[in-house]
Image (cartoon, rainbow, N blue to C red; front, side):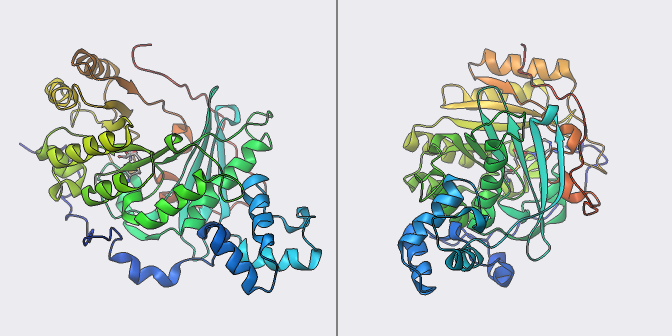
Length: 408
Ligand code: SAH
């Protein structure tokens, strides 16, 4: 009996992730190096920025001033940098604050509290990021790669393959752009401060390891070096690249780790998350527990609920046994159906029973809200759709998204 629906896509080859010891960069990167964007101050730490400013013949303290405008005031407009002489401003901004992200399409729902932007990068690659405002926090979901090489069959991004890694600057600039929007009151009219970042947009963050780690360092460094966010408010989500998870545990970073499990058994996970054929469920969970042990951070187990594929009561029980007593909680994600696939989200009663069984096993479990569904909020859906550049203003899609927690 096939594990997946008869209309499931054909079995995919194991993703080509080359992870030699000490290096978690995919081999694909070297082929795409030429496509990386111009250097941006967010690519550099403060010492590197000082050196870059000196190379331009400017005083080194201009690096801190420039950084303060970018990370502190969330602006890159040279005209607003009145503490820097006018002649130097334009030159410094041109060399250290090049425009990396060109908005192609902007969508909003939930009365403006959810906003999604499709960006075109300098080489024409498309990536998405999402801003979500909640009563107690403001979260940005960022992309770490243009496309993705992990080939998960239920994920829109996974269908197109990997174009290239994003640079540190391209990752950080997604966050800074949205932080600026929120600070200027673009969400609800009230000024809001960005508090959380999740690496749950396009791409596999741990396959672009060093740039993602540098981005995390920029996001968490105090101003003017960085954005000053708390490490624990940054979530890095992974399909489970075990060597990279181990390396992450060795960094002096206490970011939250999310593991996209989606199945408790290897037979099914081999299909839903093809990289499982390389690192099995037991091994990936062990790496997660090691991470939790090292950092003291509870791991988030992500589980997309796919009707009749992975939502069986016995799978809830198996998952419960695997996670009971561990430093973990489960985040169930109702499947966001991707165009062209007939896979559906699990029915509500099935979802409720899954939650009940996990909780009965002592595993804290929540169901993720379905924010942004009306604006193709699932990973990669906007980039996958045929995209026409906006002519004027932003397109707004009105809808009524609702946050919900299981059994509330
Ligand atoms: N590559 C990383 C991060 C990107 S995706 C990872 O896989 O963890 C962020 C989360 O959204 C992952 O858990 C992913 O499996 C999930 N996801 C992708 N497509 C989805 C869909 N159509 N419906 C529900 N969740 C989806």
